[in-house]
Length: 159
Length: 159
Image 1 (tube, helix red, strand yellow):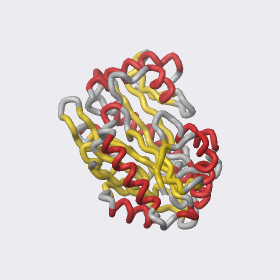
Image 2: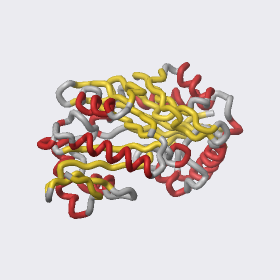
Image 3: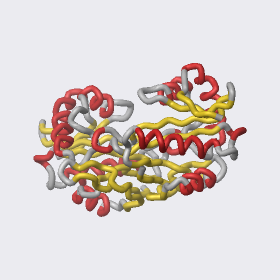
Image 4: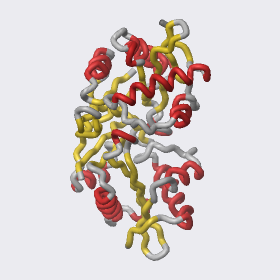
């Protein structure tokens, strides 16, 4: 498995992964009506996206950028998505570690996740292991497809 | 003083207010290179903006919308800006109260402020008085023009 910059040729595979993750309705706010063009503009914008690949298979991806412009642009944020069939194999961990190194090399002072679904235990645990603390709790901020209204966390670490 | 929907004729006055507030570098992340066209697209988008006016003078403004799409779109967020020369006269309070009523009538369940600069005491105190709690602290997330790195708060209340 290697992590490399995404290219336009990866778009189909990335869109498939994204769609299967949002279909579960348990980790990201985007609902089923999220369209491919919006996805493309989010993931192929100013900043490059990164993909975890094994041979020709895309297994996961992330994107990284400033959480705020101007006087807040020393804090990064990132979004990670791992193919449901490839979860539990350490791909998420590799993506987060890769993004932390990138953020550090780009001069960011901290990394913030704005909206970690509290019931997404594997993600919360992974982020904690990698040095993130829960610095905020947003009560009932996420409408989980199975569980109904659940809290979301804001997680943060310095780099 | 009344609060009404902003129209294209208000754009010049709103842009002036916005520029004087971001010039201080103590409340909003946007820096001096923020351009008028981006401002226009943020404040005259899908959702209407609202202005506090006294006669023909625009004294302040706010915009309101969902903080996240899809499974997070039951939580609103808002941004308020009061003309520096008109601060301390209750205009901010009126704008927040107006936005809370709007958010409630639009069916939102809660309101979240993502990035309240901790040293902006008048804003923090006003939000507390109007029922918001600090639910998160983002360490050193804002580069204050005079104070250097200061915390930002996430504030939240149900409607």
